[in-house]
Length: 338
Image 1 (cartoon, rainbow, N blue to C red):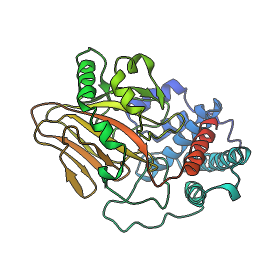
Image 2: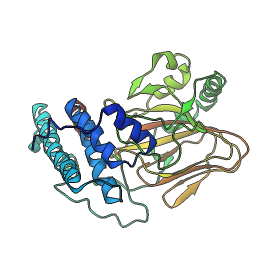
Image 3: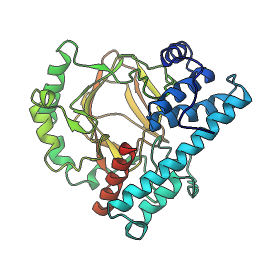
């Protein structure tokens, strides 16, 4: 089977139109995958072929031959992906003998060569992208155990002023969940393009946005002091103000990778606002940092008549060594070069 040169049954534009109308259309999903394969966009093609199988498993109509072709292409791409990642790591001097044991285990889990060890907790870690094993399980992390927290909290008033200034500027905040046709995308939380959960980013794909950090200079300066921001190429850090409108809630969900902790610095917190991570529910307290593992199911609730604003950023898990961080960065460099 010539996986690299499929014959799509419709144009890519037609497939995208059908998927916009119904993102559970497995036949259109297969056509989109075929076009991404022809374009040599293997990462996107892999995502779309994989989604075909998921849709078929939940009842979407597709022929047995088409499903078999999608599964075969997905498997072929998975082999290429593994080979590319490992050869890239080897070329970077990170051969198997040089890899940290936890990092090596994470690769084996990623490639389906090893099963995750079970977590006997009601709310296990469920990262959407990458699982790093043998990290300390937590829902909330003790803020007093992080030496840099108090200095950041002392900047709360200045950070709040800059957030409110941006909020007063028309068009600066935008919906957190945005439509994206570069990957299969559902709207399982019903939040697509809903500005009741909106954000103002100071970074994009891990890089500073200078035109924004100039407007929020004190916020950005606070981030540059001793905060151990999680720096992963093309992904982190994320630094943003987050607005949750009055009477709105963010449904339960999990984050992308468990190598980091997500931080909330509460800036404007009305009554009846709360945040659940796993089995624990807490109220935000203005100026008191909250750190948590976002790969544990969490949800945010604003039952007040006013808006809630927090500063959000991500930091490295303290138990992950610098050597491991270097290997994780190299992994995502390899992923992005695929």
